[in-house]
Length: 459
Ligand SMILES: Cc1cc2nc3c(=O)[nH]c(=O)nc-3n(C[C@H](O)[C@H](O)[C@H](O)COP(=O)(O)O)c2cc1C
Image (cartoon, rainbow, N blue to C red; front, side, top):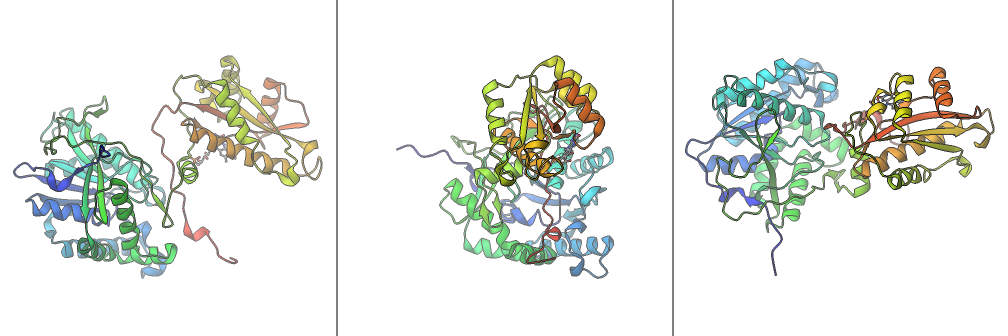
């Protein structure tokens, strides 16, 4: 019987002399989520450094901080991080708070100044390896810190003054509860004693622990340990818990570099690397395929030139027609556009649908006023067609394609322009024009979860 491929074990990895690991934590607490791996490395003589990218102030609930100002929240989170580092045994001088400039919802802005701050840390620490959460994650902060590290590493690679310029930077990208999918290359299995120790580190982030208890019904420690149990089961490592990493080497502007042969840490020979899709936890439950599709959906506005087969387009429209409608009236009509000249004309006519010019196809979702529940003057058609449009977006995502809802209704000029170009009768109202194509960029879904917008049993 052949054994299923398994990720390499970190404890079997040979370290070079004088190895230094830098944890580039998007938020305070991302270090503690990989605490056991850090402890294994420290035990092997590796020098550990921690740079916390953002203040994490937006993650503190007002009721938990007095006064509830950004400054007080920043100070609180930094205090919590210092406390967890003290428990860990990380010397104070190896901890940095970068306080990168933040934009909407407290996410770091991916601008040149922030990239430069990260580059400076790379220059100061000269790490053998950088640890950070995987970039394929619904958390915007994780996405941006990953992207900025990649840019900073590329600058270093192309000779912009960083020590070690010319050699690629090796990153170990860890799984987080919000990771969407990743490869499992290196694993740190661990047992109950380490779990109890790690739980104490995580609980040092009291503001996060309290928020998890309130919004998720379990603590911050359980949120991370639950994920680590899932990882251990997925990797079949024979331990109750595991932290897991994908290895990436950032090279020049041409993009990713093949990691084989580049790792400064020699992997055990014959260690197979395997591609796995993680099962992020949601409210304590592993994601199923439907939830993954829902959480992965995002507006995709850049496309590759690949055409979309007719059968796929028909399947997508079928998904649209599977939506619920008031009194089952199904007052919808769909127009599929594959003609390039027509796509160009539509992109010219619709000010916010310019991407249609490069799309493989587009679908117009329209409503028949006379066939809706409640008759011509009612508004049900709009709601029914919106449900169909969302089904279309989800079907597109599930097929590995990308799409974006662009508004036609209620803009009168756009409705008339679409009617004219597609010969749509006057009793039919175009609602949404949806360009579709093979995704041409690396668009990521947004994390929109806001517990403050959820009300139980009334407002
Ligand atoms: C009713 C509606 C109208 C929209 N109109 C446009 C549009 O005209 N052009 C566009 O690029 N995106 C449009 N969008 C997409 C939104 O900008 C997008 O859904 C939003 O920014 C959230 O991002 P996400 O879809 O990636 O989650 C529209 C979305 C909806 C639901």
